[in-house]
Image (cartoon, rainbow, N blue to C red; front, top):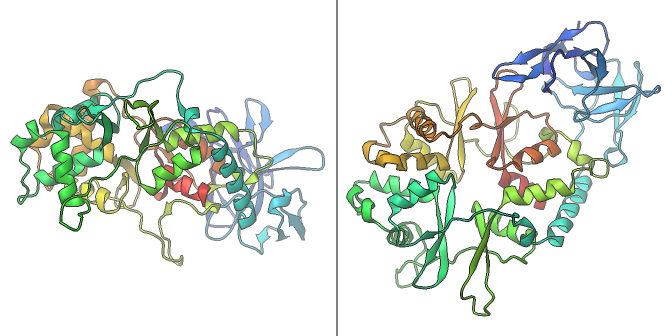
Length: 474
C-alpha cells in the first residue's frame, strides 16, 4: 500500500471497533487493543515520507481525533494529519491542500511557515515551534503565576502531617510509608518553629550510612536515633561547614500564603525540593506558626491547567507534540548532538547502585529496562520507604539485593497494606500534545512521564514536573 520502512501508529483510547483510514482511502485497517492497555487501540502500517490524512470509523460513524493535528477541507470534512520523514514520526498542524505539486502553509498564523509538497515527499524537515511562540506562551504563564498566590493552592479540606524532631528515625519513616507521603515538615517544640523536612532521600542516605563500614551509625543506634540527631550527622557529612569547620544549619525553605505562585515555583526549582511548606503566623516575629499546606509543582500545575483549559486556539503551542518542544531528557540517537545521559538500570542491578544513582544523578526516579531498553518498571526515591516496614532494612545488603528484589519487596508490602501498584510507571508517547502531558502531570501522585515508543515500549526519554516548569519559566 505504502512503500516506506517507517512504522506509524495511532492511538485512540477508550473506543472499541475503531478503524484507521489512510490517506489514499484504499484500505480499512482494523485497530487492535494494545498489550497491557485494553482500552487503547492501534493500527500499524508502513508510510512513505510525506503528508498523510487519516480518519476513524467508530460504531458506524466517521470521527477524527481533536487532540491530534487535523485539517478542514473545502466541504467542511475534517481529517487528521500525519507528517513523516525518513527518521521519525512528527505530526504537524497544516492547512488544507490537494494532491499534486503545490505549497501548503501552516494553519495558524503564529506557526506560519511554508512547506513544499510534491506528491507524497516533504522537502523540509518537520515543523518546529518558533522561539516567538515559546516566549508568548511563557509570558502568559508568568502573568498567571504572578496574579495568583499560594493561598489559591489550599484545599477546602485536608490534612498536613508534621513530625517532631525528637521522634526516632525508624518510627518516622514508618509513618511516611503508612501515610503514603514522600516528605513531612519537622517541628521543634523547644524552638517553637518548623525547622526542616524529612524525605525519602534522608532514608536513602541513612541506608548508605548503615552500609558504610566506617560509619558511626549502627543498626542498633537507628532504633533510638532521633531525627534531630540524624540531621546533625547529615550536616557533618554532606552539608557545608563554616570557617571553624562546624556544620551550617540550612534554613527551612518555606513560603507564606500571600507569596505569588511564581515565587513558590522558583523556590521549589532552585532549591531542588519536592514541596515547600506554606506557613503563616499572625505575630510579627513569626512565633506560633501555622502549617497550612505543602505546596508542590503538581498542585501549581493543576491551577495552570484549569486556567488554560480552553486556550488551545490562542496558544497553539499547547497542541504541539512534545517531541517538538525543548524539554525533558531524551535518549541520544545516532547522529544527534550529545545530550544529558538518561539514567536507566537493568532489573539485576544492585539496590546499592540504584540508590547511588538516585543521589549522584540528582533524579527522583530511574526507569528499569531490559536488554533492549524496553520499559519494565520504575524505581523511585519514595519506594525505599517500604524497607521501613518490619525493619526490612536490617535484613538486607544493598550490594546483594537486586532492584528487582527490592521492587518485589515493595509490591508485597503494598499488597499487605492494600495499596495498588498498577500505576507505578506512567508513560506517554512522543506524539502526545503539550496540553495532554501537562494535564497528566497535574494528576496527584504523578511526578514524571516515561516517554516510550508506541510499538515495543522502548524508552525514548522522560519528562518530570521540574523539566516542565523549567521550560515554562524559561
